[in-house]
Each structure stands twice: as structure tokens, then as C-alpha cells.
Amino acid sequence: MVNPRPLHIGITCYPTVGGSGILASALGEELARRGHEVHFISYERPFRMPVGAPRLHFHPVVINDYELFKYPDYTLPLSVKMAEVTRDCALDVLHVHYAVPHATAAILARAMSPEAKRPRVVTTLHGTDTTLLGRDAGYGPAIRHALMRSDAVTAVSAWLRDETHRLLAVDRPIDVIHNFFAPKTPRRSREDVRRELGLRDEAMIVHLSNLRPVKRIDLLLETIARVRPREAFKLVILAGGDFSPFLEQVRRLGIEDRVLVRENVVDVEDYLQAADLGLFTSQSESFCLSLLEAMWFGCPSVSTTVGGIPEVVTSGETGVLVPTADPDALARGVESLLNDPDRRQTIGRAAQARARTAFCADAIVPQYEALYRRVCDGA
Ligand code: GMT
Image 1 (cartoon, rainbow, N blue to C red):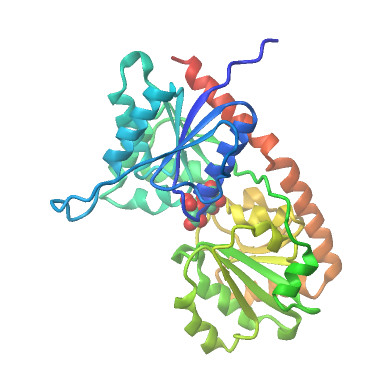
Image 2 (spheres, rainbow, N blue to C red):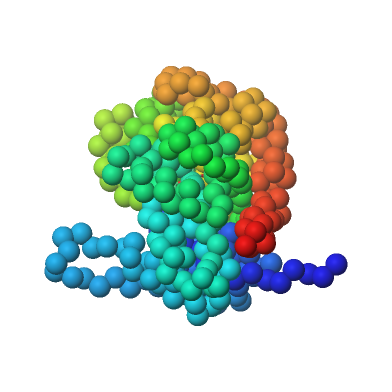
């Protein structure tokens, strides 16, 4: 069989810390490794994008400051850059991650391109683009418009697909393509990381997130304050954001000696391999990439039963799900793993096996490649 020709793919995402940007960067890297030319188009280089990798390119969007504008506009310069890269690099596909404002910019870029050279537009919904902005009357109709006019739309879980149909009344098929994880090899040993954190016999409970309100950091801290025995663990928060607004709560709960924070960590793998269990208390989560990252390293997690998380974890088998946002119930869930190393190990191993089979790059990236071929062939 003849190998299909490599594709030229433009990827736009939020380049700073956040699940959608991390996922998009990893996808770009994997696509380039598989022989495709990948062009990132954004206001900044995605923070996990490797420098100097073959077939990976970055095109910055420059935004000029005009006194006339009270609020600087990003959508138009982004769409112009998308059209320019499409023309100069013969893009087949513009794959945008997070609908706002990327999908609208891509639709405009496609309309600006000469008819014979129009790229296909693939929009991937990640979560709050539907669940938060989709409900906002100032955004909803524009999101719906861009989704209806995309050549394909994907969602990172069946739950998010259904929510999108429900909230946005988007009457079109949405493909479900779950998150994947392709970790870097840790650079330090488990012992080195634990030494850095000053851990002795305590179990390391890990939480990774961008600390946005939807992550319920208040609930995370309330839960930790209730876990017993308190000297048996430390909570390590890998924060993609400023933790200082939560310091007052940490003091009030008297858990200063139980909580360690590391902000904007790039080498998450180093910390994950050193962790014993994870804790995620989100109010909504379309998939929860951080949970998958922990599973990959055999680290079982306790999490709220929200959104697409039940597609990732089966309670009692590959993790522990707690149906209510109740700190006492969450603390009992944590204790059920903390105080039972055998159970922790059994669930951790099952979580790792599930992560490495169902949510590895080889299982997920070909689904995106097949989708690109489908929209390109359907010209
Ligand atoms: O988690 C966030 O708030 C960041 C957000 C994003 O769009 O950057 O993450 C979303 O995308 C991730 C990758 O697809 C998903 O794993 C997260 O579950 C999702 N977050 C929410 O739905 C809150």
C-alpha cells in the first residue's frame, strides 16, 4: 500500500498553561513525529512545544496597540495570520483547540483564502468553551455559528459532545476523541524529587491544575484538612497559576505544614512519578487530563464524579469517584487509599494499564489523522 502523503496542519491553541494547550502541543509534536508538517499559530510559543524539532514550526500573531481600541482585538490578526500561513505553507487543515475565538478566526481565514486553496477547519471543544462560554449570550451564538461551519468538530468526551448538543443546539455530528498523554522521560529520580520536597515517610498526594474557580481549590483544601492521620501525607500542588489567593485559607485551616506548592512546573513527570495518590475536586471537567497524567505513573486518584471523568475512571477499579462535592466524603475517599497501601497499589496498577492502552498517543493520534483525511477527501 502506498503511504498517504504527509499533511500540512495548522494548529491554534492557548499557548499558556491549560489542558487544551498542553493537549494541542502534544498532538502537534506527535503529528510531526509521524511525518506531517505542523504549524502552530498563536500569540506565544506553546509552553510545552519543543524547540528545534523537525517539521514543527511556530508563527507568532503580532498584535499592534491602537489607542482607538479600548480592548485590543486578537481574532482579526489571528485570522489574517492563519490565512497567510495557509497560503505560504499550503495548509490542508486548520485545527483549532478551544472554540473561542479560534474557531471563528479559522472560519474567517478560510473565507479569506482563494477557493481552490481553502483549508479544512477542524474545531476541538475542550470544556469551558461549551460549558461556560456556550451559556454566555455574548458568545453562544458565535460559537454555534463557528461549530456549524467547521468541517469537523470533535469533543474530548462523550459527555462534552452531549452537553454541546444540549446547550448550543448544534445540530451536527461531533466526533469524540479522548485526551491522550505522551510523557517525557523524568529527568530526576523519585528519591531526588521526594528529597527536594522534604518528604520522609509521608505519602505524597498530588494535585495539578490551573487553579481556575472550576477546579474548586477551596474544596481541595477543605478535604485535605479533614484527612487522617494528618502526619501520614503531604499535599503537593503543581499550580499552573498564582497560588497566593489561597494562602489565607491554608492558614485558616491550619494545614501550612501539610501543603507544598510548586508554580508553573514544566517537568510534571518528575513529580508525578514521585506521587502516591492524586486528588481532583473539580466542579466540572470534560475529561481531566491531569488525572490521566497521574494514572500514567500508576498513581490512583480520588476525584469528584463530574463531566467526562467516568469515561476515564471506573470507581473502585482504576480510581475512586466521589459523587458529591462534600469534603468529608472526599476525605474518606482519600483515606481509603492512603491507609491501605495494597489497595492503592492494585488500583494504581489498573489505572496505569488503562492509561497506557486506552489513552496513549498510538490509540488517539491516528483518530485525528483519520479525521483530517476524511475532511480533506470530502472536498
Ligand atoms: O482545565 C482547564 O480549565 C483548562 C481547560 C482548557 O481548555 O485549557 O481544560 C479542558 O481541556 C482539557 C484537555 O482537553 C480537559 O482534560 C479538561 O477536562 C478541560 N477542563 C474543563 O473541562 C474544566
